[in-house]
Image: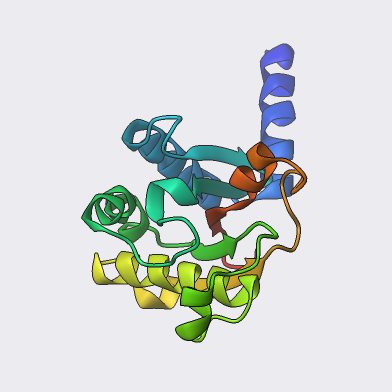
Amino acid sequence: MRRDFFKYVLFAVPLSACVPRGEYEELQRAYTELQSRYSADQATITMLEGRLKVTMRDRILFSSGGYRIDDRARAELLKMVPTLRSLQQTRVIIEGYTDTTPVSREMQREGIASNLDLSSRRADTVADVLIRGGVPRAIISADGRGEANPVASNATAEGRAQNRSIEVTLVGPGG
């Protein structure tokens, strides 16, 4: 009996130290649901320290250097809606990233002067699709990060491709 008690304590302490149980269970359920809806080439889904992050590369959602999405991309985003709509204790933060390649003249003519502007427009577009799909507006925020905090080096084509992404992060209300 004593050994069973310690197993429980060792499991419960780290869980409660990081995230309240209800929030943890909600994030775990969301993780499982999203894993079942996306393949590895569509999205990378990770859970760490009370946050669940869905990373989608721009090629899934946007044309190169753009922010508008087509019906195929909209369908990919709408796969998240049933999971996000059911969240009770979680906020959804959408962050857009870019590489260091300057924005095109076409985007500049549309008022997008920098990668920060482009990433903001991308994040806003994703948020709009999710809200129109039924996710409560009150739980969503969108922010452009531009080329700040790259996940890979911008010195290579592969690195730049990794940096052109959207992250949808689920966090508890205090996160």
